[in-house]
Length: 271
Image 1: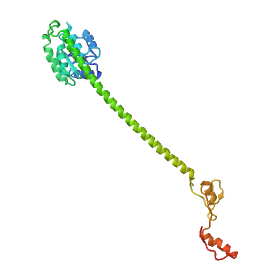
Image 2: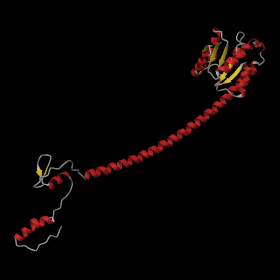
Image 3: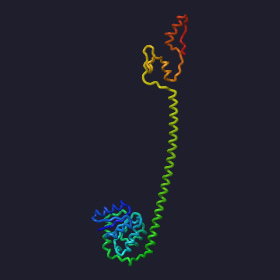
């Protein structure tokens, strides 16, 4: 069969065409009813498979225009939709002259079987002047279907907007909580940095190995100058010193000096 596939969504259109071509059929493609009518003026096809919801001219209007045509009125027409699925939509499809009505997804085998059935009855289709439904009747049902679909879309849009609003409120709340946590953490880090700075200002760390003389216990500094331990520590820290005499030094140095001067009986009393 030579088939015309009408759908404004390229992915859906291509998928159906590939499926039909795999069954050995030839396909033409149109993005809406206007383009479909233009193709039908140039090409001879055996049937039309059309979506409903399309720009410029939808599937209902396309089918109605084909049934009004003296040349095309008997052309088999199958509706294949994923949006117009209510009983009223199916009733309107019958009113405008659609032969079959399928909802997506439908197996290609079922659609082809329906097309073959329709084509066997093609010659029995009445001429446009003998069609029962008047233009006023078609327009009324068509308007009702569009209004109903618009109401459905409005409800869907309202639900979507409410979900977006709830999501937005959730994001705002999460952002607020995140900002609060960041501020708290920043304050903690600033406090820790101040404490660290204060500690560093109070302590000067002695790094590496200290070269100490084995005899006099002096320390060699970075300029290769030997100085007392007291002097070295004073330069490298903020430590303050007080002076005293340890017990060993008292017995070894102080006591003998006192005895030389005739002072005896002095004992070590510590600090």
